[in-house]
Length: 473
Image (cartoon, rainbow, N blue to C red):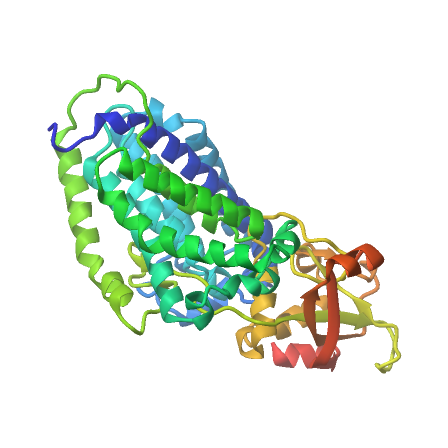
């Protein structure tokens, strides 16, 4: 079975598996801490309502069999526990078959969460984690050397992630071809980080260099993943450096980190391979069958990638085994933010005592400097960015958010940085207004201490009381 395994990659597998377990841990922790307000029984988009209208075959999930908030919390915290065990290397202490089952458990649990998560779980990195996690199930443990075909399929995912993202940029916004997108991107990205203001103010010639380097990393370097070592390792290292640059420049949940994890699977670390027995026949058959399935299913993402009508972040099967990826095919030139306010006044007037709700990650108070949250994913904050682009993106959940703010719902308020109202004194009215945000200049920062300057644009939601919000939700 020498053709089937790659003993020199045993340390690569070890590093990859531990890093993937860490990403799983963050994903399950995010789910456990946020689900009640988002998709819980009394959440903005309740799971029971979803499972009643969407059949199991379209969105396979354990929660089609039964749902309760206690069960969901149990699954999310169980996912945290299994991820922590994998991070600690428990799978290496088990027989091969048991290690496979242990790796299958977080994949099954997270698939069940994503498939009922609705718009809160519609991001590309959810499918990417599931696609990578599925292949990790068959990567083996210390009882067998890493299978060559699984290592190849992991590179195939990385190739599609990077090359697909590069193609959609060239086909999309003209600023990518003109090398000018970074004149806007750091200011208008969904959730800026603590260094984004400084990245935005880098000299424009350097922004051109950044875009050009991005094109090379996404359109040329991925091809080198399939070349002999050490070229493939050098290509993966370049991708890792690029992703770390993106980590510094913004908050993109675990998108950059799962891409780094994928790149680690192509790195051959210098280490002596331990002596292990040949792979058992049943394992060879299972791995080759999985590889054949993935090769068959890859037809649709490949067709999409080479199409002039390429789409981003779409799954082609309900198990998320193969997907298409991409980000920022178009870049916003102007940043808009929805500012949510409440008042305790009996009659809402323009001069009423309107108090602003502060979110954890999205811009609000111009003096509040952005914080680093990634790889943790602030789902509500990300959806608020989409809501500012168009009310159509918020149609399914924004009314429910307002209703819960009017109720001072405890679980919803936990998603915010600060509520301006005491727990026992909810607002009588809530409204939302649209503002244009821009980064301040160096001089404005020194004079005012504010990193943002904002200008009122228009009303987003008129003053709404509880009965009105209930009707809209």
